[in-house]
Length: 63
Ligand SMILES: [Zn+2]
Image (cartoon, rainbow, N blue to C red; front, top):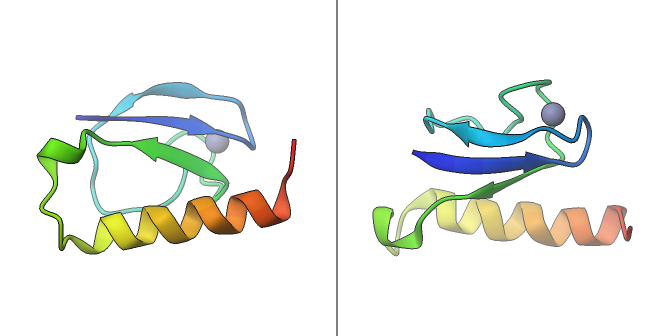
């Protein structure tokens, strides 16, 4: 189980991670995931993907 917060639709909720990197509610990529790090191996691709999404989000949306 993980949590997400979407910048596009404002939805914040928990969901079952299924490999997508988009909002479970609206499908936007402007979503932040909050997975428990202890649930994920350090070398999991999702770690890198979340880091990249966070950096892109910070560059594109400064609010
Ligand atoms: Zn959304």
